[in-house]
Amino acid sequence: MNQKKILLIDDELDILEILSYNLEKEGYDVFTATNGNEGIVKAKEIIPDLILLDVMMPEKDGIETCQELRKVKELQKSLIVFLSARSEEFSQLAGFQAGANDYIVKLIKPKILISKVNALLQLTSQVSDNAKLIEVGDLIIDKDNFRVSKSGQQFLLPKKEFDLLYLLASNTEKVFKREEILEKVWGNDVIVGERTIDVHIRRLREKLGINTIQTLKGIGYKLIV
Image 1 (cartoon, rainbow, N blue to C red):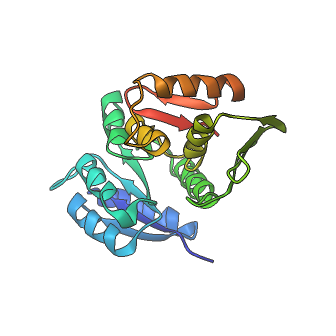
Image 2 (cartoon, rainbow, N blue to C red; image 1 turned 90 degrees about the vertical axis):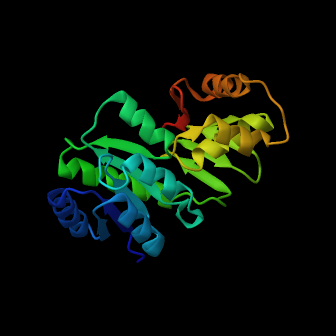
Image 3 (cartoon, rainbow, N blue to C red; image 1 turned 45 degrees about the vertical axis):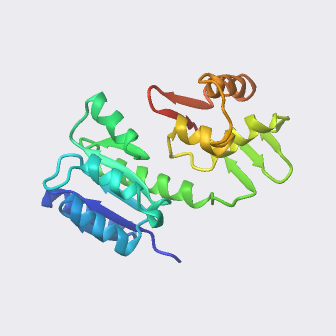
């Protein structure tokens, strides 16, 4: 069994100790760092499956650290989740904009945090970038045959709608930014209007259900499981 690796980056030693203890009890291989610079070096060394990252840290704060981590090619598949005492909306938006997959406030109870970590890692392990068939909840996407079904109901989608849905389903823990969607679905060499993504999202919601896709204002879109 391939043991999942988790990197904790936080300058509070008691937090590192508590989280390490609980995560190791769950069978995870846990590594720690006490500041952003140390965390980046450690992440490049071990290539973790998940990085739990604080916002307020010395030397390099969490936002800068996340931005640097997202530039490392080998870490593109690593989940990055902020675990911070900062609960303000602007802090959470900054975290998502820096490339985080999720943002959790530190007041969360350890058992609930562990459950969330388990869910994140189990879900992402079910889907690979090259997957031909993606199953997310009651949604099934067959890339080879361009078929989509939800709760047994079949849908025939135009290619761009299908490509957009497939992209969102490829990583349901990720918030896809508008720029990334345009690049991966329409390509850099195609000029489309600013509302093109919105129109396709609206059509997918009409067909698959209004709550299928979540909008994070000012950031992008995420498929809801």
